[in-house]
Amino acid sequence: MTEDGDRFERVPVPRHSGDDYTSEAAARRREFASERSEGGLEHVGSYSFDPALVAGNVEQFMGVAQVPIGLAGPLLVDGEEANGEFYVPMATAEGTLVASYNRGMRLLHECGGVRTTVVDDRMQRAPSFVFESARGARDFSSWLEENMDAIRAAAEATTSSGKLLDIDRFAASRMLYTRFNYSTGDAAGQNLTGKATLAACEWILANNSTIESFFLESNFATDKKASQVNTLRTRGKRVVAEALIPDDVLRSVMRVDTESLYRARQVSHLGGFMAGVNNNGSHSANGITALFIATGQDAANVAESSAAMVYAELRPNGDYYYSITIPALIVASHGGGTGLATQRECLELLGCYGRGKVRKLAEIVAATVLCGEISLGSAIVAQEWVSSHDRLGRNR
Image (cartoon, rainbow, N blue to C red; front, side, top):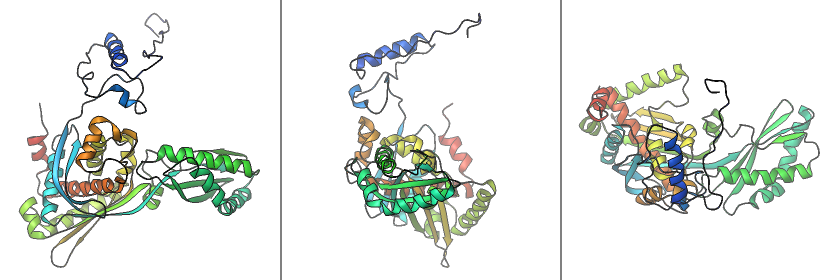
């Protein structure tokens, strides 16, 4: 309402009925926005690619958000897919972040690198089915298992790369909650699994008359949310990154010793438990977000992907074993935003663009996260955390 009580007239953002992905259409929307605000959009309108490229990635395109990209490395990885040195592009506006990860990469390079292992790989859609009673839900669970071959055929008919691995089943009240688990190739897979599961459910509904109603997603896949079920059962890639850090190397690079760092880890673990966190590490979201933005991942998946479990040991000889398990790392090397201009360049920098590269990318992300964890933990113990931010994180 206006101050006089009149209703605002709704003025929609201008669109072109033919081709809406042109420089002219984007310029018209910037002009439209500028007329209704106090600021200009000069930098938003500065980009180097054909707007036609973003069809399927954004609607009502008007320009770009330019996020600074820093380069960290070399990151030394001993993985099953990622082997050797990598220079890691990190998109961020947080001063000190790239420097901190770079310092962790230096430390673990001197320790022989980060060993990485992808231990599971699955993406879900989670429909729920409602029945007259709990007995109907129980019987339907058995029926699903008996008809798995036909359900799998219906789902996989919609995709060339997705495979239905299995269906988890959880009964509650007169409902059966399910998790359709897929392998999705080099795609992150949320859209793939949605389309495949819809086809499977259409077959189920046509062949089972006991179902009162169903919902394609019951919030049990927990899209864009961290959850205990995904921590235990995996969503995306489940990746472990681990390293063994000798005491003398830690003292030389980080100016702390392994015993002090391990004691701080115990204190941090208890603090996180008291606070009720779903991540007993320090800041996995920092490195994951910076890599996601640089490489064209769905940034909202950081909500799930940043859940992590740190485990550490102080060995009898003083060496420090440190690992992080990321149970729901959702990444893609093909499709989505990975083909956009700057994002593709960053993936190519890592050797991770295109088909057959997604596990390599997952290993690099996990190794990067480990470097950031050990760097921040060391800075806190050495009491350099605040001073480093004062030195590098201020542009006032």
